[in-house]
Image (cartoon, rainbow, N blue to C red; front, side, top):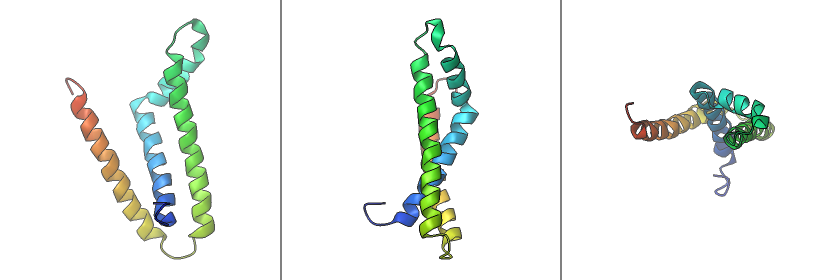
Length: 111
C-alpha cells in the first residue's frame, strides 16, 4: 500500500495487524512460553531459539504499532477520515486473520 501511495491505509493496517497478532500470540500462549524458554536458556535446551524468535517478533510488532501510530497522528489525525479508515482496515485485518486461523485450525489433528 505504501508503494501505491496509500499511506493512510498502510499505517492503520500496520497498527491493527500488529495489535491483533499480539492478542492472538498472547491467547495462544506463545508469548508466555517464549518468556519461560528464554528464562531457561542456560539449562542446555535448544528451545530458546523459538522463544527468542517469538519475543523478537513481539518487539517488532510493538515497534510497528508505535511508528505507524506516530506517522498516522502526524499526517492524518485531523482530516476526519479516521473512523472510516479504522473500520475498513479492521475489516481487512479480521478477514486476513480469520482466513489464517481457519486454515491453520484445519491443519491441527483432533481440532
